[in-house]
Length: 190
Image (cartoon, rainbow, N blue to C red; front, top):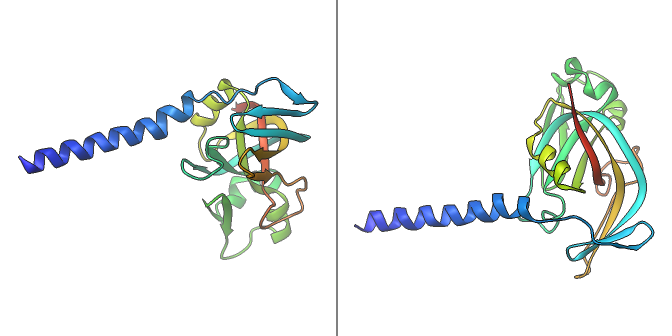
């Protein structure tokens, strides 16, 4: 009898967690309200400001979904992306790629291309879906696929003092080098 109760409690908690993690974020309407100023708009408890237009065709090197950090409600998914030589499967088979804590890591026993080429042609990018269609596409894409995206590099200022700002350079590395993108169009390429 005690085991049945424990199993029922565990199943109930798992069900609640799944509703909170899976259902609520996808039903959360992040569509912006009316623009506050030219290039800025309110999304939930944040002001999102466009910094510059952005577009890219790239291969998905890795994907990490977030549920619990401060940025997860706006940006539920990070994609490590590669373009140019970092989209070449022959190059990628020599490089181990991982993500954690909003960072992208790569490792290679022997570099298949110059280190600078790896750094200039790959990045971890934080995706903020601008509409339900982008959110739906983002939820479906997988490592190895090719995508085309367009939108805006943005900064986010939360009502609680939180600040998150996109890099505006592809030549930077380390802390602050990731792109924070308001993704207006996301297309899976054949």
